[in-house]
Every structure is written in structure tokens, then in C-alpha cells.
Image (cartoon, rainbow, N blue to C red; front, side):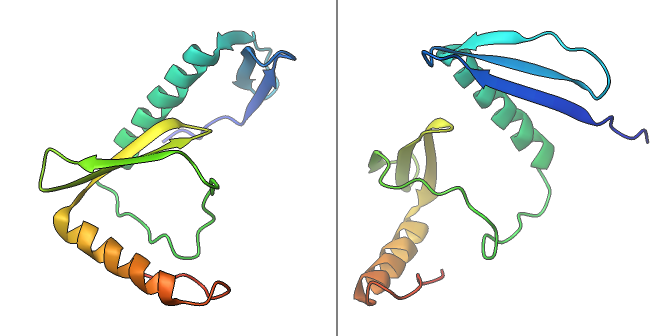
Length: 130
């Protein structure tokens, strides 16, 4: 197995925030910047996410407790009945765009129970774990 070379990565958003310049190259080598508009950047993020999904497929999923989680305050969200016996939950994440997941009816019931218990707690109490 060969070791991965250390990589330098540079990202610069244009002043008018309509494009981004990305540079990536092994440390010590020159790179050529690539300029992307918002749609191209969103496509790159989606493709990187799909690639990561492929890489972690079959690996154990570590627990969320104790991990640092990128938190979004008050995102737009949407819920609808899913094509399976469950619900589709979607929200707009500023870094990843529209993100959604489908959960089974049993998971919906568990989430409703946990959130109901959460609402019973004083505002300064930690959240209930499922």
C-alpha cells in the first residue's frame, strides 16, 4: 500500500460571491486554479458526497454522541409522506444544499416520542437521546 502524498488545498470566493477558485496539488508541486460558479460548486459537493458515501458503504456507522456536528440554526425544512411506510424529511443546509432522508413509520414514532419528551424539559436541560 502506498502512502498518500500530503496535499495543499486553496479555496477563494470571488468578491461578488458568484464564483470560487479552487487549487489542489501535492505539497511542493504547482497547481492550476479551477474557477466554478455556484451550480458547478454544488455539483462538485454532491459528487464528493456520493463518493464519500461509496467509500463508507459497508463500514460500521459510529455513534453521533460525542462527535462534533456542524449545526445549522433554523433551516428551511419540509416533511411529506414517503413512498415507503414512513416520512421524508428534508432541509436546506447552507453548505450542502437540499438534504433529505426517509425514515420508517417506527422511527417517526420514536422521534415524535423523543421530541415530545424534549418539550417537557426546561429550556436549559440537555436533549433526550434516542
